[in-house]
Length: 552
Image 1: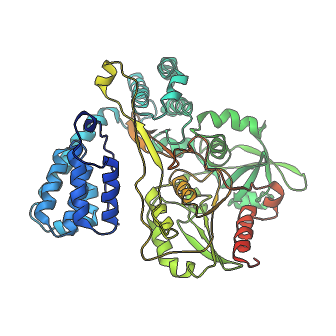
Image 2: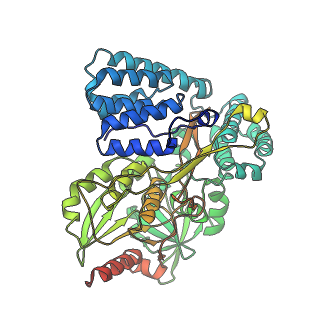
Image 3: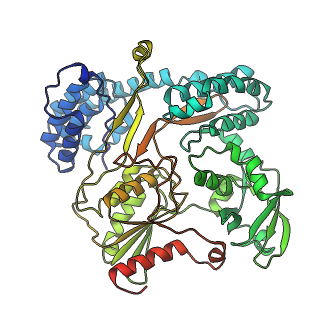
């Protein structure tokens, strides 16, 4: 799949001049994207260059024009457009080197020199924004200067880049920074310092804004047992166990966790875990606290966990933590794609992640079998996101008409405007239409299954599905967090990311901070879970088989 740089232009300059085009820049972008998708490359190239002329400071449109010209075999024009893109600041040399659209240019003598100039531009740009001076390596104890520098960097990057300025106002972000200075000075280890930063970050209440300690800390201080849990009807249930000793002592899926190191389980979770979880919604915080972070702690320490089985028998056991590599091998995440047929000729496709192109690639490979089904269930309940375009490729097979992803907004900071005491500005962009898959189409009824673990790009997928009006969303509200993170490096081998973009439904309806709401709310119950029933899947299967007139 070719890499095409997403339009990010801010057309502020266009308002200061008389625009020569009858169409708005956004309409021109949409027109060019449609022409590109339809392989009308000459028209697309012309329109992308028109957009670039409206805002010469935004290089992606000159780059897109070059892609179209290269596909047409117009090497001279393509190199000219690429030179214009580089002059305007384009620096994604690795992306250009992978882009299949530009493959016809790679044997040209001009190619290597052009890539070298892109790389040099990128290095200089990255050095300005992400200086290696801040990226000191891991040590068990950082100097006071390094700790304060790291706090200051995180505070300043959030102040100028975090999308939710209302939240910053409510927190008094500058005041919070001052209150954290003495706390940072008093920390005695790098691990304690990063835990403090995580607590500060958690107050932003955004799942795409996080602090990450160095790998050495994560391995030594955030180890977990061979056990997974989930909060179900207000009770913490074991959902998976791969520790043979625990299995032998009666720990199995459905057993309830009631205490941790003598504390009631919720008191433990609310004091030791929840304050350090960056989460956008209550359901997101619940998932992070009772699933992703539950029982995490130092590798050398073994918590004592109190359990209660279905009969009411209470028992307490040591639950040893293991190294991350051992846990990942014993308890792998969902594969990107799986497919099976259910009774009633209903296809169940589980999409475990959009982190790579595999989910869409394998869906396309399996489509001949999927297309034989009378109805289709797309399960994204455990999909934590990745690249939104992966999910959109799958949705294109359900569409007969162009469909839309999210509308988005980002801060539009101009120092001169601040000097002139103008209010804070926001740049908004409506989504461009995405074309149906011209080679594949599934016409039958469809349902999408969601949960609070449905996150990020998987929520973008859910939003586009809802906007298509192609079927029902069944299950629980999604996690309520998506956006474009900005990554920064911090002293001591750690890093952070900051959400710079706020997405909504195409019509502006919010889902960040709320979650995509299902058409049919179906929540797991303790009784059903212990009986091995997947009530969400059962509800979807019953709905779809009813629609197609067969019994499951």
